[in-house]
Image (cartoon, rainbow, N blue to C red; front, side, top):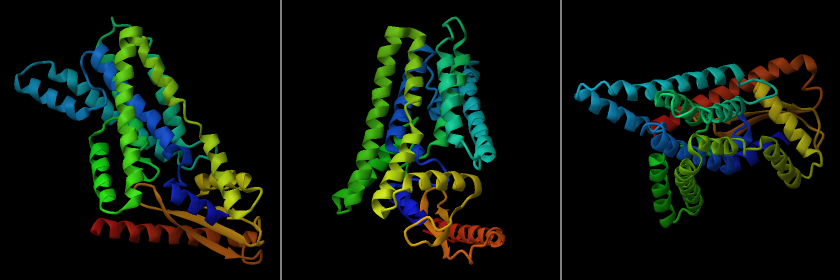
Length: 329
């Protein structure tokens, strides 16, 4: 069962360390919509600043600085807020990665939705810098927390990298790589939805004013992690013939989040005990799973800590070897 979970997630490009829903294409599209919307919102209503695109803000800051214009400081603020968001995201990741009942990305999504909703209450009389700093912070949380969709690296607050990746995969597809075609379509979908978000931001900004940003809160809350876990469980049930697969999947994912591995004592058709842990690449994608198999005597309670330690040590060695080889390529 544990191998079935790992294999399924690997096929779908999911990760076991994080909730599978975080890399679903639907989630990526919701986030891309938000990214495009917020860029249009801050540009049209909050002083002509692209809260997502810090490269543009850096250029503008440098231009004004070259003219010895004090407005250079105005563009420094969202850059600093973006950097602060990265630091906060890493802190949340370090504190909540092994949390039992919640994934740290869920915390980021909830915080982002609340902050975006709060921005809609800020009147135009308040200096634009206040909103731009908040939105840049929000976008930093988002881009630093959601880096892959179905195993593909992508961004939800900018599209240059996505456009490059789409072109690369189109080229690979044209030269016979059939799987590259699907990847190219995913990138194109993210780009189109980002543009749709910017279009919606422009339209709603004219109709609702500062309250238009509330549409982003709805997009951010559109993800349904529980539903994706159920979908994963049903898929495993169909592929393995184990009726209680959905419950095993929920238990297994919770255990992996908490301990880094999952233990299954004979809850499968072969009555075999199994202890398994995912092997991750540098981006957190699942590339394999290490599994220890045996009978009840092999997995006595007094042996479990030692076995778990050896399993996790083996996983770390595999990850170091794999990632080192990838760096050399």
